[in-house]
Image 1 (spheres, helix red, strand yellow):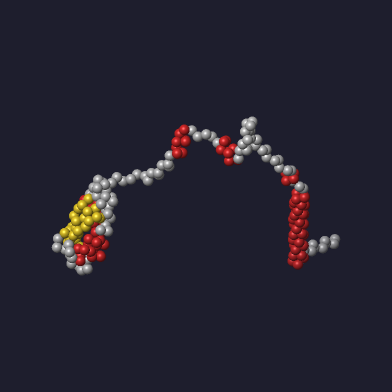
Image 2 (cartoon, rainbow, N blue to C red):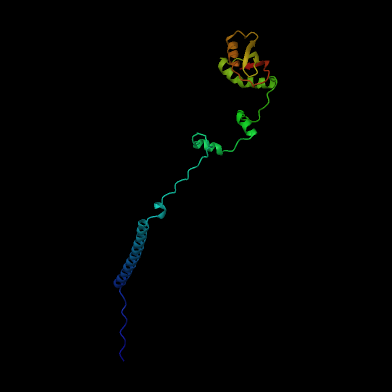
Length: 203
């Protein structure tokens, strides 16, 4: 009894050719599908551009003119648009009319720290201590200790109106330099100002 011949298998080259042909068919089908969709979209766009819009061709209705009534025998010309707008505004009440005539109220600066009646000893000494380093740097030209007593009069706005060194150093160059810089010290503002004496130790 004759035996059936064995089935022939596809070689690698034949298999590669079949895969390549199948891939080409898939690419071609996809390209045709995209091209047909693009043509349909272009045809729809051309049709919409060709059809004129009814709203564009229809003439816009002319605005109705406002009619102004005139009394018989009155030869006045029609009111201007500004006059008609003013006539349509709501009349002001008595309170609003009074408020419009008053000057605007100044803005409040917020809570203000109350000033002392007179310059306190604490505020006076704090200001002098803050100024001491600058006085030492500008006036003392040696490392020797110097002690000066300074009498200071302060105005209500915090400015020094009078300063004098007491004692033997009053007429020296050091005393003059100290007085010059004491005039530049800024004290807190008060209602009455004040006068005080401070012992300035320089070293």
